[in-house]
Length: 565
Ligand SMILES: C[S@@+](CC[C@H](N)C(=O)[O-])C[C@H]1O[C@@H](n2cnc3c(N)ncnc32)[C@H](O)[C@@H]1O
Image (cartoon, rainbow, N blue to C red; front, side, top):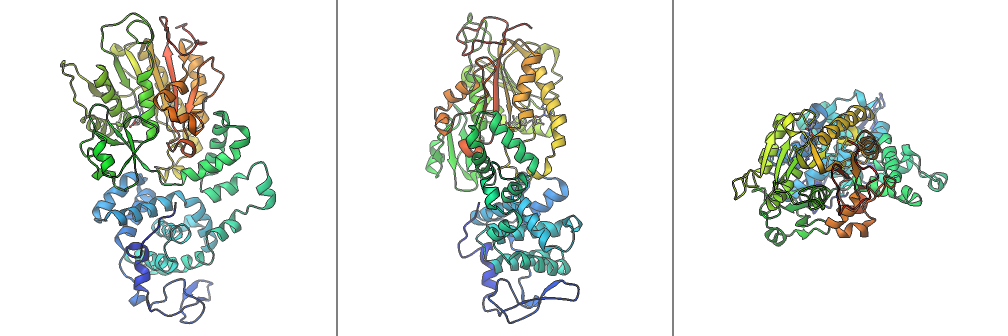
């Protein structure tokens, strides 16, 4: 969580600029506002230079972070999409890019704590502040409370940023507020705002509002995560400790996960460039070195940045024996090429891995996505995979349309379907730092309805004996296990498979990390839930089903939900 800085660059630019300055002390004016006037007093924590001599220009790394926060708050932008452009625009080198990333992402993730601190230091509700001013205050608070940036550097540089970008008046206000933040360190603020009294520490559960400030998550998400841990079979006596581990994992910067597309990408030069082999998924690597875009194969798209949980779900879908004729699940061999469908493909991460696997297996993939611009991203992602096999048969194609309205010709025609459903994304909070604040409980209703309809459409497009993978990057019970229970009720011909065994077949070491937890109670079938704090993946959920219709010998379940439709 804490970025270590060496003694040059944005982290201490203020330190260098403030060397040789005198002392200062806080005074309040007649309105109770704090001003920095004096030249005497205790040890300096902040700049006392005359305004005319203070740093005037925003440093580029902080500016990149500030522009990212303002795009998020003003335009509802996604930080992970905005920041790379700002880093490029300001030509940040690798180290400054790392600093800007930690600053922007950390300020967004930590907003719960920082706003609680700022609310004490500002004399009006934070909602009444101009948004850019609040963004700058959050950046300052993150530097002061979570980064190893000297207090005077954090303060001086943030004030300079505000003066440069917003104006002289707001810079005085920001200066006064941030000086109040520096009065105590992070631990003291936590003890003041979210005390762990002996009673609280001993209580069976720490109150959610205390966790919310200490770990900077909205209370409704904390409750959903706790419920999900319990429902997914984490041991009851461990749930309290695991919840804290999970919240902390959500606040840590994830390591870059890479995958070499099977048969197309080469991991060796990536490993030579400093990546290390990934312990979970085949052909995967972990990279701690910053911008993965510079690694061999990444520009060409044959090596891709992809969370290892996503990789595992794509592999698992392709491992399941098909039922009925033609499947390796036991029926008579079928001449036809396997047809695969990725129903919700944008922006194409899993589709590109599936297309590479399809190419190796002589299958073909239809990647469907309703949003035009995302369908174009899918097309671009798939370009790394030859469009046609040696036989001239297409390997993949892209359809731009609603997954609930597939063409009649697709009815009961696909052997394998992935429904990587639109969801709250509560499993990817590490990567999407603003999403925990943007998401609302009211999002669940429309999303679960859409998931239900997409599942129904997928069942209609699946041939008897075909395999369906339902995946969310959310562990929320409403989007995962309850959705599965409902699907089994609506489609008695669906059989829930032992998803955990297929995932652990792809990644045997999953079991060492506490297992891909499954929900018991559906015959022999299980669902699987991955966790950031256990597996260092996003909290991906997966359920594998097979559609009945012909016998599926070799199946790993006795199939308590065998065919009726
Ligand atoms: C979780 S994302 C899929 C991620 C993708 N599989 C990947 O690995 O890159 C869900 C996708 O579903 C798409 N979507 C939303 N509504 C849809 C619908 N009615 N039919 C099909 N896809 C839909 C969204 O646009 C989004 O691209």
